[in-house]
Length: 251
Image (cartoon, rainbow, N blue to C red):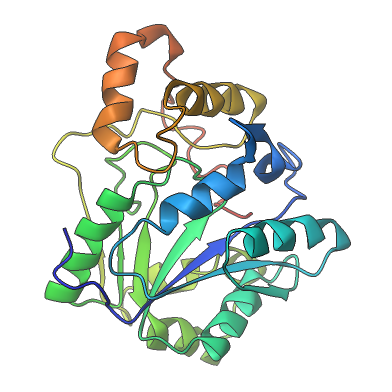
């Protein structure tokens, strides 16, 4: 549990409809709502977040993403399809909060409890960048990145590569001689679990999870999904490490 109801924290959810591997994945529906709706509603359960904003592209197909954000009561910013960094910069210009959380649309099983614990860790032991992805121990799809507003803005001083413009935080943790970065690890290494949304097989898994927790879509927890998989082992999705970050979370 976080120590304060407000941490001057901005959560940016990046989402788009033009995913190469699974187009319009954020618009898929389960239990009567788009999966992006469920994700936004789960993010809203996180204590310590002051503002949530959705960052999407200016592509006309992402008008539907904007509509989903509006229906959930959160604002949006739009920018370049490829230059995701520019979208984040627009969000920071509008909501100039000191702490930023990056959440991607391919993580529909976002876990507020993990985010809260990591937010506490970030506030108690400040760094430029804290994530649970530098040395993965959580399931792929439970990704959380927390970093300072100033660190992200300072990337603008560099000639960023196309990859760094697309993948936003890559420019920070690639420059560990300049930025203090730390990994947050789970007590048990569950990195082989695949809970992300990037393929039709992933969707089959994610939708089965949501269908199991009908009526509890915004408050089922990490341990609940693990228990569900213990009871239904054949439904589990696993990865030997070759699929994780296949698209560098570019959504």
